Image (cartoon, rainbow, N blue to C red; front, side, top):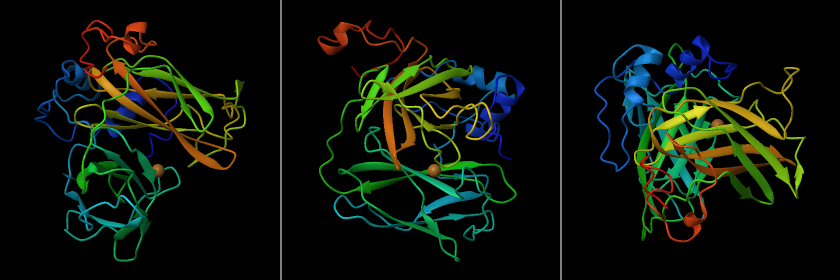
Length: 318
Ligand SMILES: [Cu+2]
């Protein structure tokens, strides 16, 4: 199954896509985490899309459907990179060695601190015994979430998550305010569209450099952009992909990359766009609030925060 890669429109196909992307329909009994953001609405939406009355977004569990993510390295390095090793074990408790390639890789590893800072999207190597490894360093101490996004042979795609600490003095940073633009390495990326809880949301990310639209984005992992969305508060994981792919005769190499995303609830999300240009992959980050327009914050956002600045949408970071 590779529906995520073929994400191409609305309707039935899209519902199927997000059934996979969110891991809907496999697990019931989701209890909203103890976060300040209200999460009403997500379950009703899940029921509409996938049938079951309750469902759990991806990335919140260390084990699902008999598969388990087991870190073999106890801590993450903050200085020089150190080998980070882990295994995916299957229902037979043995390390999984057979994977179905998705977006050019057998497994995508996302590493991010619990406060949504320090995002990395990397690709470990698989040894014959089923051990994954990659040299890894994180930018600062703290509790990190490690997500393994993969598809075992004969099974649907899974995203499992585990907490791994980077020892030291953890200084959490507040979530940046919602914004329409992000800058990275001289590039400006503009976000268009709104996140609507439980509905398909068309997001347009437009890349420019030095005031000029970038029209020669390079394919990276079979797409002009990869977007990961994490929910503030519990780090529920969405991995969405562009509408169209390089070489399909209709998808331009920028400046716009179009995604269809569906978030499971109201609240704040951090969006991470990986794109490649001039041979280098960069990540542009945005905060977006579902359930309220993600317009440029009012002037108050840069001065005195006002409770009404983002509405009563549960966005608690100003
Ligand atoms: Cu990847």
